[in-house]
Length: 594
Image (cartoon, rainbow, N blue to C red; front, side, top):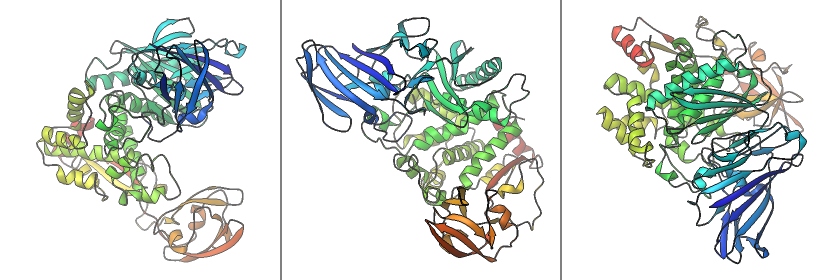
């Protein structure tokens, strides 16, 4: 058995010490650190945070030579080997490791060496209680199996192999803990960071949500207990799935307050994040592409199916809020409209297909630049749109649903963790529905044209409208037909002197005039642009007019003539339309209820 000792040796310098004990090592023993963490498809090169590493056996120090960015060879006597390293931990994201005087957190990919040839060997982790007085009230939260721990959770844990070892993140802090049962399975929500949440409300609502997921795939779930590891911050949002837990970062103001009535939009956002990561316990942690079996954490593993695992999950994350009765149908349609809006505000959907977005995740989604909006599309948001379109198509043209496809995926692929081949989702969809879906998948997955969702939604008694961003939400009356909302075709952020252009939309007025990302807008039509933005200045003009735009490019003042156009309507509003006929209303009720 491999053994790992983890010590918090310096809170101020953010250093963990990790010792890896290898019994009967190879005399030329290879060791490595992962380059990426499952669930986040970017080469993060965790070995770069190793500040010190050395090895010794029973006779004393032995040679340790670095062979590549993340690999070492240790030449030793073949007796018990101990490799010690210090790791700098100051990444507060869900993907990294973090340590300071307030809390500690780590993923196994950041701290645990992989011992070549021992990837299937069971391992123990000894988490040593820190002596620093600032840690005296710290407790440990993890889904890893305990062997012998104290009341605070420090002590020994175990994992069956390296894959499991790195799939149980650990939180060490003075966190709050909320326990509940869902389908008779123990669940916990741990929250680090300051907050004033209604713990009883959280337990009740998460119970409903988790039981909806378990009912969907069928009890029992694929874990004996589940842990939400949360970090409440002033401004942040994100999550990462694991086999029996998930790491979450969220705004503390998204949590429900005591005596709060109803579920606010902020609280919906938090619950949607929990729903997304929980759904992943089935879809991607167990139902996964063949390319991920086994994981090769030293190199990219490409698949064109990321839309299946992230996009379909994104579709169900809010649908499960509805099915658990945490939100009503009007609130669901509002959230669905927001998701569709994100797609329609991305002109890159006409350039990059969903299959290519999935394949290129390693180099594009996680490495955005000033041209990303023009050149790429998210397999999260467009994948969810395609999942919606597929579900509605199946419900309209057959007696099947996307629910059935996901449940068969779980039975055939997830329960035994048999990898999904690149063409098997499409073939399974056609098998279950008895429909020829080739044109649908060619258009939606391999093509770059918009799916005709407006017509499809009409078949479910739902009106689909696209408006300007400032035209209000679903409860507002549409603006007058002759209303013009002008658009410069840029995204900008406040800067010291004006508004810095962060993106220039292809073929928009600014693009055609020659403006660049990085230009700082200072005046439009002879009037200064201030922090209130561009829209207020544009209200003075009409489509077709040419106005002067002054910018600083580096330290040079430049002026451009920009011909204004009406902005694209890309804000999606969905409403019930009970005049669409009984058949359409019945379809809608079967899909999302009354």
